[in-house]
Each structure stands twice: as structure tokens, then as C-alpha cells.
Image (cartoon, rainbow, N blue to C red; front, side, top):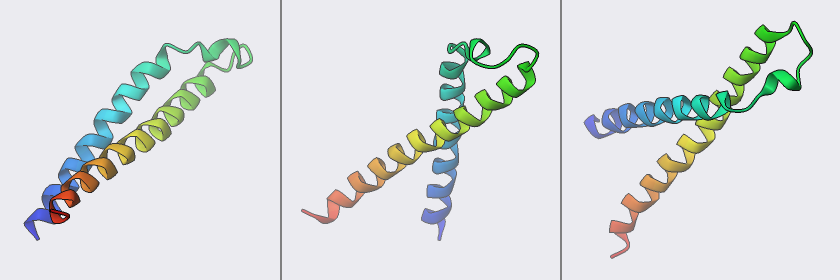
Length: 76
């Protein structure tokens, strides 16, 4: 049971780190040029949601990769 809790905490930390990194990357993209003038709040919300989506996908990849690599010990 403790192992499941540790896995959950590590997963949350990985997700938060990936979301924060993707948000930093998304800030470099100038979405304001695509969105109409005067809609900066909508552009910021779009950046936030895009960063959450990208961070979730990248975090899921890393968690799956770590889980798969831990399962390799059962192979040998």
C-alpha cells in the first residue's frame, strides 16, 4: 500500500514539473498575434490550457517510461 502512495506522489510531482516546463515553453509562443486584439484574457487561458495538456502528455510519457523500465526487472 505504501508503494502505491509513493507512486502517486511521484506521479503528481512529475505532472507538476512537466506542466510548469510546458508553461514556460508556451510563453515563448506569441499567441497574441493569432488571437484578436483585446482578447488577451482568452489568450492567457488558452496558453494555460495548452500548457496543462502538453504537460499532461509529456508527464504521462515519462511515468509510462519509468513504469515500463521498472517492469524490465521481471524480465530477467
